[in-house]
Structure formats: structure tokens, C-alpha cells
Image (cartoon, rainbow, N blue to C red):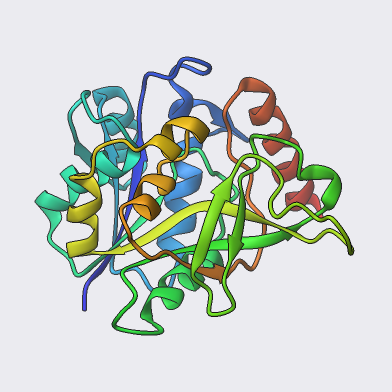
Amino acid sequence: MKIVGIIPARYDSVRFPAKPLAPIAGKAMVLHVVEAARAARRLDRVAVATDDERIAAVVRDGGAEAILTSRDCASGTDRLAQAAAEIGADIYVNIQGDEPMMSAENIDRAVETLLVGADRDIATLAIPMPAEEASDPNAVKVAAARDGRALYFSRSPIPFFRAGRPAYRKHLGLYVYRAAALARLAALPPSPLEKAESLEQLRWLEAGERIWVGEAATDSIGVDTPADLRRVEALLRKEAVS
């Protein structure tokens, strides 16, 4: 069974142009992600899927593989599917190019969540989060059934705790798909819930797909703005010192 990690890295970003190339501790952000992916035990191959030669050049100079994809890809999943057509594997792992703190252990756990059963086609991760952070719309929350199937993802705090002590789970932007599932997802049109929350995984749930949620080993921080970048860099420097 061949398992490939693909890192979508788009050059144009409304809030943060050239984000994958932003330096963190002297290294382009995308290379931090590549480093973590290469350390994962479960991956047989790692590639960056990008729409820009500048990103591809930095990746290749860093000794990693880059695959050029169309600028017209509407989502990271579309970019992943396009790169997957060139690679050919049984399982693909979508590792976000703006998650420089994503750990190799998390990548392995996501793959292992899928491998629990042959009936599992899509897997992801979540981690407990403090109640005071649940109101942040940039931190996506997930509610899951007892068997681990995702029931819903939201930018709002879910569930609503009418009584009892609040306990929220933060969703990490890491996905694992079997090849056939990835092809199905890439063919789906946008859905009402997806448009309402701006969360692509809701398109999959609305289409009847099942997403299995595993437990993350560590948290991760997505970089959407230069302020996020400064926060991540401070945390990485702190980790290097400790």
C-alpha cells in the first residue's frame, strides 16, 4: 500500500500573498511543513503541489519534490487531486502548506485513523481546546459520534452547552483520503453549508461522505496573516531554546 503526503501551496492569497515563502526562523514556511512530513513514519513519499514556479524552485532547492498544478484549482483538495493524478497511490494525505507547526506524529495518527478499517475513506484529527478559545471563528470546532464519525464542523462553538462543563474539540486541517474518495470529493459541487461556514469538509458531509476523527498528539496553528506568522515564529524559537 502506497501512502503519499501532498502539501498544497498556493502563491496568491488575499490576506497574505506569497505566504508559503514567508520566512520562519530563516526557512520558508513551506519547507517547515516538508520537514515534518518527511519525518512521518507512515508516508512513502512527500511532494508539494503548487501553482507557482517560485514556490517550486524554493522547494526543489530545499531538496524536496514539487509538482506544478493549475492556478484555477478552487481548493486545496482540487490541487491535491490534480497532483495525485501524476503520482498514483492508494492513500493521500493533505498536509496544509500554512501549518508549519504540524507534527510528524499528527500525520501518522491521521493515517492510522483511516487504517482502522477498510470502510474508512476519509480521516482527520481533532484536539481538546480551552472553552475561552471556542468563540474564535478561525478555530474550527468539530462534534463527533461515539464511534469517531464527524457529525458537524463549525466556526461557531459546538455543541451549545446548555448545562454542564463546556468541552470543545478543535479540528486540525489535516486530511487522509483513499484514492477513490479523493476523486469523488474533487468532483463534488459547492454546497449550502460549505458556503455558509466557508468550510469545504461540510460539502463532503452534505454529500453523505463519512469523515473519521482521530485524536491529535499536539496542536497546530494555521498561518493566515502576518500576525499569525509572528506568533508561530515566536513559538518555534521558544521550542528551540527549551
